[in-house]
Image (cartoon, rainbow, N blue to C red; front, top):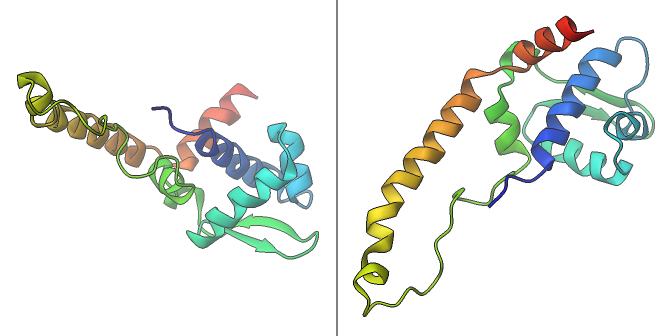
Length: 141
């Protein structure tokens, strides 16, 4: 299972809003050009980010702005806002053979390890703010 690209597109979008909103309107068309995506994709992501309280969006060509400081937005916040994964990161096949000793016990054996892996990934995402990424981006420019 792969985390959808909505997550990385959302992070890109937020960093572009941060970088460019002082000098121009960060409309969905402008942001789509930065991401190299369809403006409809950007509008959907902005809608999710707005619902999560991460961005403000002005109707028409008003553009988007950050609703919170970059230091208050973690990668985990973005990950959850854009529903990068529906439920658990790892999914089990629906009907393993209950008469097989492996099939009967695979979930009990594997689930705790997969749950731990997902928790570790989510904890890592909680440790990184968009401010951290903005500093890293600035160092590359």
